[in-house]
Length: 515
Image (cartoon, rainbow, N blue to C red; front, side):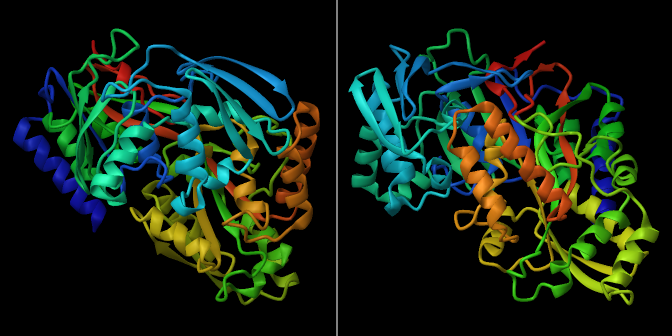
């Protein structure tokens, strides 16, 4: 029904404006973009939403900047650094950078952000698990700080790509005057755009930071980020010229957008990986005990033709993957083989495991693209006697994550993981396989946990590579996961708009221009 309604809306938009006519610019000096998901809070460290990360780069500045094409890291707010010893790193901040209220960026702002906003237990920040390696931050002078780690930590530079310093003076004043809730609806940074207004479930309005230190940017005096959950509505707005860019487009809509005069699509392979996680531990009370049997998990792999789903459902706009990390990440081992499509072998394994009469499985999902792929996968499962039921949380990612953390996602959890823009297995595997720290561990494999913990605590690259190699092999050998595909960003755009989308999944709207 949703698909029919989407087609009707798209056709209606075409009739109203004329499909052959070019869309008007949403506003010559006003850039308007739309995403599927909506931000739940403006507090940068009270959310892990992808939409919050993407908009964060507009309002704030990271300490280090990533090249959108090759993923390499470069100086940004931090201009230089050195390793003092195995547990001490020293950093220098760029002089002359100011917050939007005119206060200077200082080393104290970095300390405050890490220690008081992220790591303070009273804050209950969902980002804290990624920063537990910090023992303390020492302020040496206004522009110099040291990070003391609780052991050798190899990913500090990667983490600094997603650290946005906030102004301690402003935050303390606002909280004292308005209470903590104020920070959920208001924010301020050093970035290219100033925050103007947040309308929950609808939009964020931004204005150019006229004193931005990176001279010449941004080009647009005004920018609005809209939240439009229905893809059909996003496309209709793009066609009519109501927006200049529409994110989160499904592959089957690429032809209709490209056939509309004045529109085009941007398609970029990204770090995000989609996978099925089996409850091999029996952590969720209602999970079928059959999933504890490796033969059943391997049978599920054999039952599904993932490459056919990528070709026929996703239009080839994804890439098959057999390992539990993105091939672009450090230590990824593409030589590891998964389990080929072989329904007869799947049936034999199920029979051997005592399930030749089949079984029932829930499949939990929260994005449109994965839901479509899962529905196709269910068709394959039915052919070997497995009945799958979609637990649909599309548009409710936070709700499903809470259910998973509370051990309530029984059966199969289908997640997509963007690794917080970090090109290292540490940004994905410990979240699912390192107990007791992992909130999503449905495996309980102590050996895996030990390998991942050791890899996190050495600066020796070869040793880390070996440990991650062993971890990848075991995850696939035991079929704890079925990696499905690595994703691609698909964005519909006014073809007068020049914008780059990085392999880290972040659109660089702060550098966008009209052609």
